[in-house]
View (tube, rainbow over the protein chains, first blue to last red):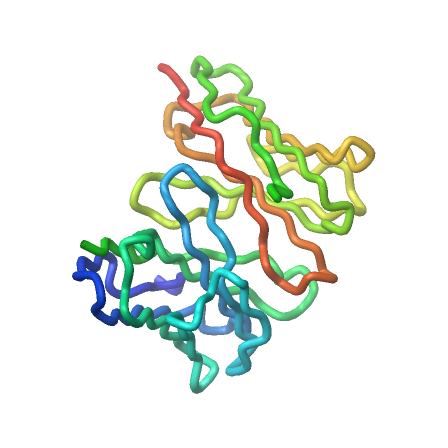
Length: 115
Length: 113
């Protein structure tokens, strides 16, 4: 299976702890995106990378959030000093660069619960 | 500022009938639209897309219609099957705003056997 994969699928943590999620995109895709989805809402954009460069960040991405894509392949999303409001599904997506390759394909998500 | 809205939180249809899911948008810079299907505890699965230069795109049982003047798009599923029961999201992208997708709130479709 060459789809987008995310790890872990579920994470329970206590308030104040740090968590890190990993995303492996479709191998030939240059672009990688992070979204967050809360109950009853559609996914909300957080940030995106083209290769290793982080090109866009949403104002939702507070200074407690940091994302990296060091070698232009997998990406990590870290949340420091977690708060209960961070509880959500964190989705990763990837897409190609060329015209007609712009459809974003999503991974299964990481569900975070902050107690 | 909800730029993409799906005003029907739920829709119920009989198997074999047509399902029509609607989506409205406010940003006239949106130039690419997509529909995703989502099952519980899974990520969204891409269904079909349409560029703003077209008004219709068809793929098997799925057809998306775009009415730019009304800033409205719809997804038609014919015939509907019980396996189509899921939450459907429409999403839009404006090339001038980078690659981010803006999603609607979703519509829960239930197809009854």
